[in-house]
Length: 114
Picture 1: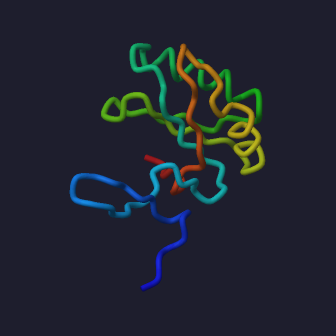
Picture 2: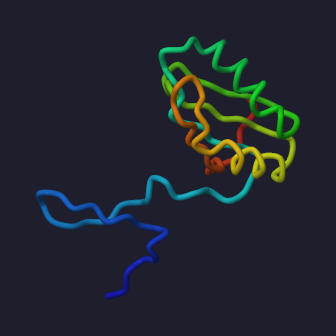
C-alpha cells in the first residue's frame, strides 16, 4: 500500500478514525490569478473591491477583480503577469486588511472572461 505525498493529501482524525482529504491550503500552480480569502464580510463589496485594487496595484497592473455575493469573504485578483502576482502574494500574505489577515494563494485555474 503506497501513500500519496503529503502535499496532495491531509490527514483528518475524527470519530470514524483517520482518513485523508485534499489539502485545503495546497497552493495552485503559479499563474497571474490570485485567490484571496478571509476578507471582512462586514465591509461592502464595492469598498472591498476598490481597496483590493489600490492594494494590489502597488505590485503591478490589476486586470480584474472578481467577487461574488455567493462567495462572501473571497475574491479573485488578476494581475498582468505571473511575476506581479507572485510578488503581491508573497508581500501581502497575512497582511491585515480591514482588521483580518489576508489569505492569498495562486488560483487553481485561470479566470474565465464572462
